[in-house]
Each structure stands twice: as C-alpha cells, then as structure tokens.
Image (cartoon, rainbow, N blue to C red; front, side):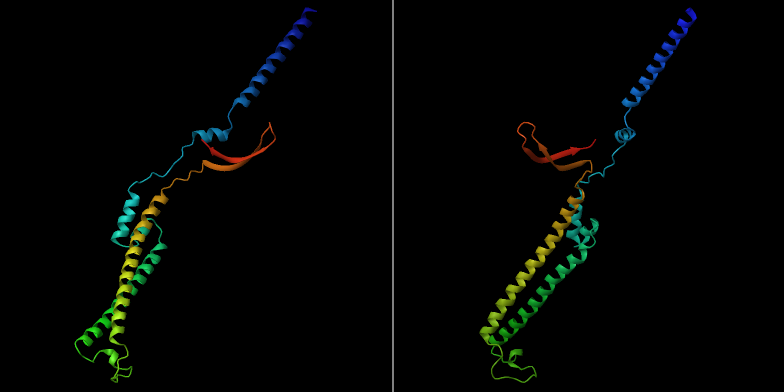
Length: 207
C-alpha cells in the first residue's frame, strides 16, 4: 500500500513538473519578439547626407556656363531646352538688330540728301523715282526694330536667369528627404457615443 501511494505521488509530481516546464516554454515563446521586429529594430537606416553647398554650386555652374548646373544635378534632358531657349532669344536679337541698322542706314542716307539707299531700287535693281519706304516709314521701322531688339535682350537675359534658378531649385529638391517610414493615410472612425462618422488623416512613423 505504501509502495502504491509512493508511485501515485511520484507520478503526480512528475506530471506537475512536466506541466510546469511546458507552461514555461509556451510563455517564453509567447514573450519572444518576432524575428522581423528584432531584425527591424537592430537594422541601421542609411540616409544620404545633405550637402548645403550643392544648390550654390549648381547655380554657380549654370551662371558660368548655361546647362552646366543641370548636368551637375544629372538632369541632362534639360540642357537642350536651355540652349534652345537661349538660341531662340539670341536669334531674334540678331535679326532685329540687323533690321534696325538696315533702316537706320537708309534713314541717314536720306537725311544726307542721297537717293541711293536700297529702298530706292526695286527687287531687280532698277532705280525708282519714289522710294518703296518713305522717310517717315524709316523712322517708324527704326523704332519698331529697336523696341523688339530690347525685348529680345530682356527675354534672353530672363532665360539665362531662369537657367540659374532652375539649377538651384533642382539641387534643393534632390536633397529633399522623403522617408519611407513616414506615411500619411486617411482614416474613417465611427464615434461610439453618437454613432457619427469622423473622417481624418493619420500620420504614421515606423521606428
């Protein structure tokens, strides 16, 4: 009888011991952090360092040579646009300047009493009794082309300035940090008190 009691007691103690070990093992597994969380918490986030002088460099390069700042920012597709715009402005300046001097030379010849300017001849080179453009017309043409020439200069200088500004702004935007851990998402929540819906934005930052 004593032997039987000892076996029962020993069996019960063994069962309780095994149960306690099993419970502790389950608890340890429950308390253990998921592998993803551990890896995420121990991982280091590598970010590109910000160079505060980069925008100034890009602007300086574009001031020295238009398009060079865009090349510095690796926006190579903008270089043809810069030169096309500058070339267009330069073309109109040269053309208006040429026409201005053309009418001015004819006007000076008229004032000197000569009838040998180009407007006294037809396209075949025959001299005319009445010029194709009057003296008053020469004055108006000079004013017109001089105004257009000045506008062409201003437009070309404006394009040159925009080329510098574009390089500077691009360099700033390239250093703008958009962190993938930071997110903004809309949310819709029902108020438990009055059962009304609330719409808003949620800002999440993942560590």
